[in-house]
Amino acid sequence: MTATATRVLVLNSGSSSLKYQLLDMHDAARLAVGLVERIGEETSRLVHTPLATGGAKRETEGAMADHDAALKAVAAELAADGLGLDSPELAAIGHRVVHGGLRFTEPTVIDDAVLTEIERLVPVAPLHNPANITGIRTARALRPDLPQVAVFDTAFHTTMPEYAARYALDVATADAHRIRRYGFHGTSHAYVSRKTAALLGKDPSEVNVIVLHLGNGASASAVAGGRCVDTSMGLTPLEGLVMGTRSGDIDPAVTFHLKRVAGMSEDEVDELLNKKSGLIGLCGDNDMREIRRRIDEGDDRAKLAFDIYIHRLKKYLGAYTAVLGRVDAVAFTAGVGENAAPVREAAIAGLADMGMAVDADRNAVRSDEPRLISPEDSRVAVAVVPTDEELEIAQQTYALVSA
Ligand code: AMP
Image (cartoon, rainbow, N blue to C red):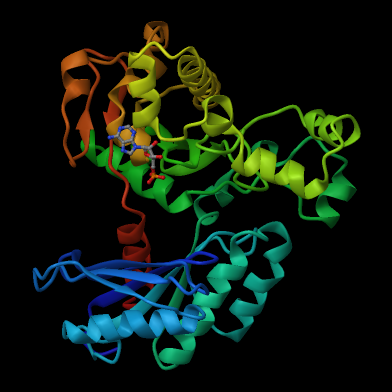
């Protein structure tokens, strides 16, 4: 890395997608952002926004057979803006990796041994890690000389005490198959809990925060003095809150019932719980805007879905208040948490005895900045804190390679 190398390319590889952002860590400015969709199909699409040049968004359609073709297309777009991957200003590539198991508690420079270890975790993250691995292999082939860093969604949660992380399962079976609660969305929970402390003018070590990451996927975490002590997702991102398409917490016997009584296959149960449940299963919509619109029109199914979603949130707020003992702040983040004022209002309603309240006027303000939505005299600060997982990945990557 040269002294002038301050740029980090952040890659988030999905099974048929590649999201990227190029940031300059000198001032955390975003130079370019983009997304390739439908990789492997005839109709792959690249959408590239060159923020550094202020140029217009560019869209390219056409078959991109694999992630290699997609990343080469991204590299060409960046090069056209004078931001090519061969630039000496590029310090590193930071990869989002969903599952780091217990082995990866920190961002890690990727070498062959690390890649083998991430591959060993595929059985516990079959939907996510293979795509992340493909992204890493592709980027390493393109720039073998450049440091590549894996930033793990699970890392922030590795501080959970054993009694929070372990299921009450037979220990030998659980250990043989690495079955435990890992938690996900860790970069978001880390970033938002730190930002919330800053909003309160405190050091993260001084505050206890409940973070509610409410996007299409959703998770809650209890963060004590900057360390995660509990989180709602488990072995996989299926556990916990009601999500856009995932059920969240459910009696595991429901799965036996679906197989034995409803005659469903393993794959069908998996698909039902991960893709056809949650809000979409309850009311046919997973977008909170649409659900609110339907409620305003008097739609009972949408109202019930909303009420179930809120009820689960309240249960986690109560549980994590008990886990933390003292709560200084509740932070709402991600697509729903940042934008849906009615969700924030309903989740906090009735929790005055827990010291939590929302001020209607403050809650109605729309802004991209972290902000308080609780009344001035609230015992617990309730906040909206926009998340920025790419910035967190870039910062962790840069901190590691510039150390
Ligand atoms: P994320 O996964 O963080 O990108 O969040 C996506 C979800 O945020 C969508 O499925 C919507 O349910 C929700 N969302 C985004 N914008 C709004 C909005 N203005 N009001 C309510 N919900 C929103």
